[in-house]
Structure formats: C-alpha cells, structure tokens
Image 1 (cartoon, helix red, strand yellow):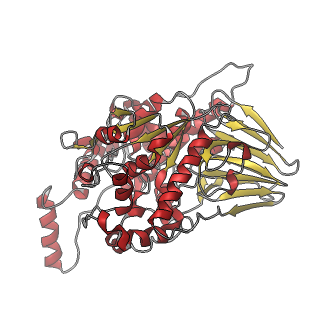
Image 2 (image 1 turned 180 degrees about the vertical axis):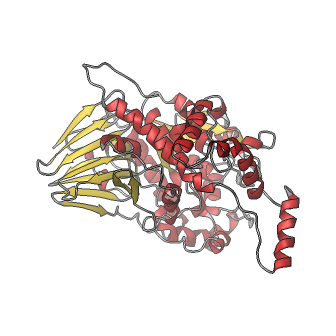
Image 3 (image 1 turned 120 degrees about the vertical axis):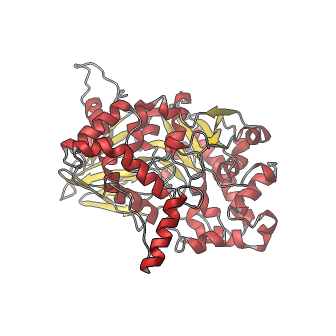
Amino acid sequence: MLTYQSVATLPKLAWVAHVDLQQHEALVQHGPWVEVGAQGFIEGVWDGPFNGADFDRSACVFGSGAVIRGDSFVFVSSASTTDYLYWWAREDAASVVVANSLPLLLASLNDELDPQIQYYDQINNSILSGLNGYTPQIPTRRGSVNRLMHWNLVVRAGQVNRVDKPLPPPFADFGDYAAYLAQACARLADNARDPGRARPMAIFSTQSRGYDSTAANAVAKGLGIDLVFTVTKSKGKGYFADDDQHHELNDDGSEICQILGLPCVPIERRALESRSSMEYLFYACMQETGDFNLLQIGEYVTQPTVLMTGCLGELWYGENYYTEHPGLINPELMRGDLGNHGLTEVRLQAGYVQLAFPFIGARRRADIFRITQSPEMAPWKLHTSYDRPIPRRLAEQAGVPRAMFGQVKMASVLEYPAPITPVDPGLRQAYLAFLVEQGLLSRLQTLLLPWVRRWNAMLWMTSPQRHAWSYYFQRIVSKLIGRPFAFSPVLTRLNGSIFCFCVNKRQGDYRQALAVTPENGTRGLP
C-alpha cells in the first residue's frame, strides 16, 4: 500500500519513499507536482498511456517514480543517465528508503556526505563508464547510501534487487530508427498531456546550431512544443567561462526554430553571474558542472514540464570518433562527457523533467552505428571531424538547410577551472570557510586560490596558439630528458569538495522542509 504526504515546501518534483516491508506499506513524501495514485506515483513521462501506470515496463521513461506489482514495490529510474534513484536499506532489508535526490535521501536518514572523503568526483565521473561500470555506492558520515542509474529497483520482503529495463527493438535501417524516434516522441507527448493527469505537462525544448537539438526538434516539431530555448552564444574555444566573454561564438538557433515553426526564446548563457543564488543546486549534483547555461529555463516553468535536450548526441558519430573512443559500441550507455548531468536539483525545484532525446533507443547503439556507417547514409555525410549523418538526415528532411547547423562543434556550457570556487560571493565565502574548518586548506591557501586557478587554466588551455611558452617549454624538456614532461595542475584533489559542500547545504534545506508541520508554520526552500 502507498500512503502519500504532500509537502508544499519540498521542491515541486522531489519525493522520498519510506518502505516498511513487514507491513508492506510505503509512506511517500513528495512535492506538490508529483502525480500520485493508488498503484503508483511518478514525476515524469513514458511512452505509454498514462492511466496504464506501466512505466516500470517501458524502455523509454524519463523522470522517476514507483508502482506496486503484487508483493513488490518497483522503483523506476530514468532511461537516461542524467537522473538517478538513491536508496538505503537496513541490513535485514525490512526497511528501505528511496528518493530521487541524494540530499533528500540524506536528510531523511539524518546523514550527510563526509568532507574527508576526497574521491566524490571520481564516483560521479564513473557515470561515464556506463551501466555496469559506474560506482553505485556513495560513502557518508554514517556509512553509505546507494545510487541506481537506469535500472529499476524491486523491493520485496527481505530483498532489494536491481532489474534491467526492457531493450528497445532492433533497428534494421534508418527508416526503422527514425520511425521509432517519431513514434516514441508522439507517445511521450500524449502521455505528458494526458487529461488523466492532475496536472498535464507543458513541453519545452532547446535549440542550438549543433546536430542534437536540431534533430530532436525536427522529429518532435509536429507535436505542439510550447517553447524552445536557445542560448545565443557558445563558449569561446580555448577559454574557461571566467575568461571567454569576448570570445563567445554565435550559437543562436532562432532561425532553425523559425524554419521548424517553433516558438523560440533566447536565454542568457551567463545568467549565473546575476542569478547566483541557485549555483549550489548545480554543484549538489555534479562537481565541475557546466549546465549553468540552462539556468533561466526555470523562470518559464509554470506547470509540470518536459524539457527536451540533446544529451548523448555523440552516439551519432561515425567510425573516426569510435576509433578515438574505443569500447563504447554496446548497450551500456557510456559517455564522453557529463553535460546535462548537473540539472537534477534545479529541475526538481523548478518543476521540469529532462527528456534527453538521443537516449531514446540508445541501448541499440550497435545498430545506430551500423546505420551511420551504411551506404544509405552517404548523402548526409560531410566527412569532417564533426560529422553525424543520422541527425543531419532527420533535420534536412524536415526542411533545415545543410549550412545552417552542424558545421562546427560548439557548446554553450560554462566551464570553470578547478579547483572550483563558486561565483556567488556568499556561497564562495561559506565554501572557503568549510575548506579551512575541515582542514582541507589553510587560510593562506584559500587566499592563493585565484592564482592557483589561473595556473591550472593556463595548463589546460596550453597550445601553440595560447600560452605558447608553456607548450614549447614542456616539449623541449621532454626531448632533453627523453620522456614526457608536463607541468601539473594544483589542488585538483578539491574537485569533490565542492560537491560534498553543496550536497550537505542542500541536505539542510531538505531537513528544514521535512520538519514543517501545520503546527510550526511553513518555510520554503530557496
């Protein structure tokens, strides 16, 4: 049995379930926009009828939730690798706690991350290794909790088991794959807008001048997308965000939206610099995240919303990419970077679900690669280093001119050099004090951090064009000593500390929210 407690002060789409297997019941505390029912609950969409509540049997579900199946509670994670379930179980598995937020789970357990753990960044980066390679256990002050990526979690008396989602159907050729994408998008849109929902969802999307969002919008353009956001500037090549303002490139997707007949709104890539109060929510998901470029989207969310992104577009590359990145052509959802993986706390707060379009059917990566390499795709190959014929064909057949997209690899993310120092003055001051209090840095070292970050930035951006003295000096020394020589970045061991600090800060927000009762009034989250 499921019992629900709507908590107005929780983020709109956050939830935590306390499962008592001896009583076969679960108390679900949730934000006000989570859809709840007798058989299950969800903050998300899937490719089936909403009233069927069979999202645990879907290969194409985005968001999270749970359903009751006989004597089991089946908790469902997103089909993408951008969002996760977090869970803890008593040793005898008589009591299990599951949440769609790490700091919310920690708050429910009266636990927090351990500042002395110096490898939280490695745990997060392990997501790149895919479904069977990522690190599922996260150490805490009181022990550890678990993270579940993509799989479903089946909880029954005395047992907690990880269960795979069904695989998408095989794709024989481009027609098969394109039809699957179109049909899945149509079903997802129908599910989102189903009148059986207490709050039918809006559908938003993103648009750049790259391949991935262009393909997504080309497929979904007839489904009534409510709003598309374009970040008009991309990052300056060879620069970090704190030094690239005068080197940004044009990444405005407005013209593409006009051709596709989609309503488009430009948003500011650097909005974080004037709206930094939300900064810690990004770092509470991922250290070194660059997803601040999407910060403004939350300002437009007035009802539960699906946000379509182009995350995982690299699966559409051809042979050259996979030669340089071997071992990726499998169903494991391995990644080349963690773009769009820092949005969970922000999206739960704002009230949107990230639908990462390339993940639809992505576990058939071998089929997708074979189609990419097939003779039928030759007319859509540019034979450049940035060549993705499948999204090019999808977009061009929808009427987008060849020269308008996919010509140069760009990205609008905001990347800062490590060790990360927050932009927000108050957050930065609190974080530096945390580093000193925990014995991770001395006060003198915190004063030197700006210089440390400049040194690291120079090393990471060294090339014959920039910081040439460093580039050629290292090459000369390597030749003289007969082995590779390189200057080393400094204090990168702190990369996981910003994650730990911000998770624990967010955990405090959740503890405050969960303590609210009618007797003691109401307090909201930031």
